[in-house]
Image 1 (cartoon, rainbow, N blue to C red):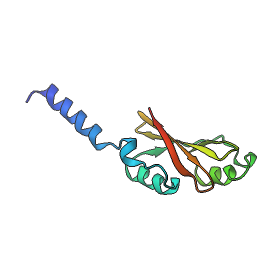
Image 2 (cartoon, helix red, strand yellow):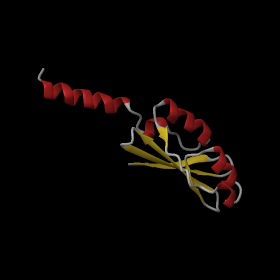
Image 3 (spheres, rainbow, N blue to C red):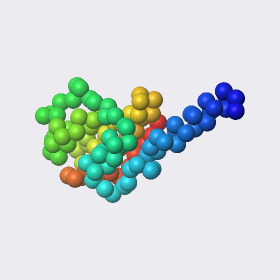
Image 4 (tube, helix red, strand yellow):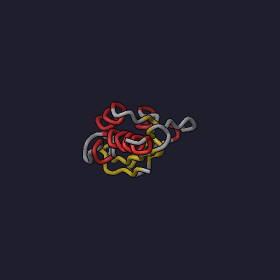
Length: 108
């Protein structure tokens, strides 16, 4: 097998082994549970160092302090969380409500 084919196969195998959002996440489950799956699959939290949690209203304030990867929370109960895989793939998860139930995500 030539070197180019070996490299191509290795690349395909690598990406097959990496979690695809649909295989890792489930809608309707608590974020805390899905967060553990992401950490186990090698995703890293994108930390937001300049957040001002105490300026947010509840339940966003509690969510902000509990999860440093929260990007933003709206007044109506939606929150957005940011993740990366080796800095080359990004995953944005939205949740709703006091229990931060996963209701959607986008992967870039």
